[in-house]
Image: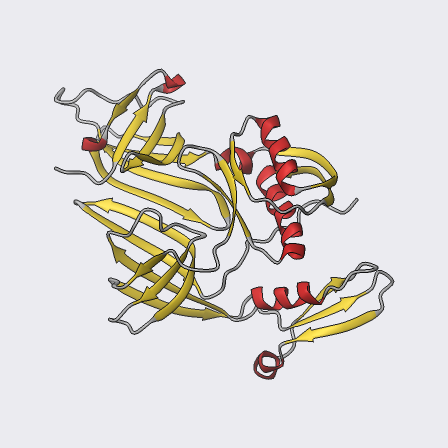
Length: 328
């Protein structure tokens, strides 16, 4: 059988690896913009008749998923289940994002850019870094015992309030942390789907932002009158510091917390570059749905020789905002 991917099993301790592509029964590779770690789940054949050498699935083993010679996922096994009643082992792995979600730190940053702060934190915890989006914005924040991924998201959220950009932390296929600016235009296109599900929600709706000074004086309100006419007023409060104008931040808040419209599309043989955080142009002639969307969640599945993709798409280019820690 000709495979479009290769799966390598790395020995505990990294002493060597074995290509186990031919043993894969099912495989699922997935991610979500709200979680920094991507996951890989594999059903791996473990014949007991001696026809194939039993793979070493001990604690410390890792998986590498490659496509076209490029690593798409590198991560340690986090769970392995075998049974005497079946010749298939169920494997779960997470990439290096688990070290950012699973470690907590105590940090105080005063006049430091997010990119410099993140570099320092990753150095402390032995996390390799790739390209970290340049903001040039200095922040002041303290984080008493916070998860590293929440600190990173908060730092870039604070910078984004001033730059107007949206940032996405993620782990590269070779295990490095990168922070990228979310795209404003699509680099990929979907012209045919296997199915489309459309949904909308106002569960997170905010249609009014009240801006106050530090001493509690109302400066102004930024509102979505059309939404209020239908749904009533749902207000968020922003504090405007001396010498600043919070109107831009208020408009961004309304945009990010308006009517949530989502599509779930299923695609045959999607590009592996189509993962959460990316922008895609959908032109589906079957459903009649078309437009520019952003991927909030993705699941790539390989089974019975087929590569299927399921994608949660959002009409809005949203940043997964965080507000950990407190001001200095």
